[in-house]
Structure formats: structure tokens, C-alpha cells
Length: 119
Image (tube, rainbow, N blue to C red):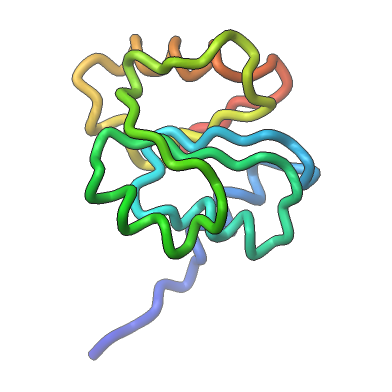
């Protein structure tokens, strides 16, 4: 029998980020775009950008990511200048990265000092 999880992991994780709704957000390892879709569903008004190494995952993300740019990007070599985004999300993806410390440092350099959330 199918059972829904008691916790909505997408909303719960985004709640922890304490976003105002106008930040520019980079979702590294965006996969199927569920976090981008959840942000859009909350009425997020800031720039949303999804990044993933898998073109197939980005194709799956397109229907839920709205007009957000979706980029084929390696989390260990992000092509963004320092402080390009207000917030960087890296949700449920670090176990896919060969060198986590490099990815964490690279993600941290993309966003301002205000918020960097990991789950």
C-alpha cells in the first residue's frame, strides 16, 4: 500500500532557509527541480537558477522550474563570480560529488554571506 511521508521534505527544508521571497537563489544539484518548483509555488519573486551535471535531470526539471535558467554545471567548478546569488541551496546532492570539500567551498563562494543552507 502506498503511503505519503508524514513530512513534506521540500517545504520543511525551505522553511529552514528562512527566505524572504525576493532573494536570488542558485539551486546546485537541482535534479528534478522540486525545490525550484516549491519556491515558485510559494510565490518566490527573486531570480531562481538551477544547476545540475545531468542534462536528463534538467529536462525533467523544466516542467516544474518555470522560466528559471537551468544550467549544466559541475558543483565542483561553478562558473559564477563571487556573490552572484543571495542564497545557494545544495539539497540532497553532496553524496554525488567526488570531493565534497571542493563543492562546498565553490557553492559558498557563489552566494553572499547572508545564508548558505545545506540539508
